[in-house]
Length: 205
Image (tube, rainbow, N blue to C red; front, side, top):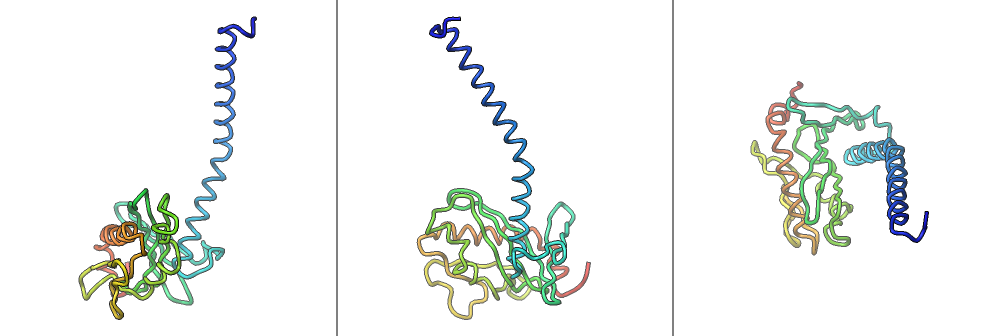
């Protein structure tokens, strides 16, 4: 066959496309279990971190996964003899999905720790939701005001006055992502309210 002919070039191109596609498909199938394991490990690490535990802690020993009617999930963590409840939260940031875990004490009200993550927020701005300067503000804050669920307000600038149990400061230059975190917590935790209101004073399921 004439290697300079159009027919040869077309045939060669088709064969190469098929071969490359086959190699990529095999690679994807081979890597899929590894990728799934990495995702599971990262998820477990985030859950542990939200409870103030090392990401390398024995997950199965200290975390119990619970599922409510309707498929809602939360996690129980045993930390120094105390039980914490960890709620997975998710929402939309400025440039893509954001998510995280909110750990609360046995009263289902006082936040003991949070972990947030994102897919594509702006480095140095909205991406700072993962940093300790932002997440650390949530520790000790309250989700309820009396019997009313209020969530946590994320206020622009130094807007969270001292003694405000229901607000934290937004990230400078990352207000939209910061407010997305506020909405994410309020919207997601709202789905758990029937269960929380039944159990927040220490009654058992």
